Image 1 (cartoon, rainbow, N blue to C red):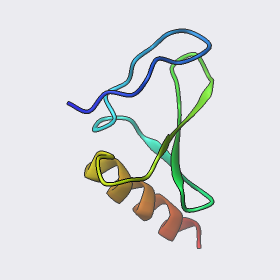
Image 2: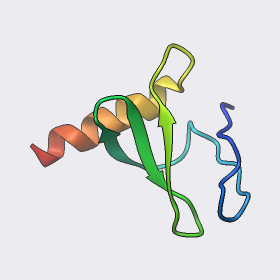
Image 3: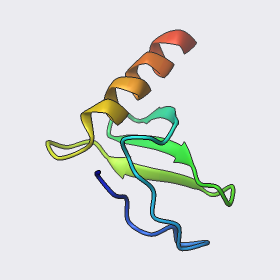
Image 4: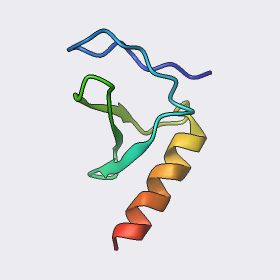
Length: 64
């Protein structure tokens, strides 16, 4: 399991392999909504959960 950092609003730590992404932010970060409603982000890099990146790519392709 790849964990996120704690949410600044509620402290929730998410499993990045199971969150539902909203898409990419400037092709540098993947966005998702925390359970508290806060929009969260994680930078895309070599150690980012590949399943999360793949799901974000699908979401962005569906929008275009």
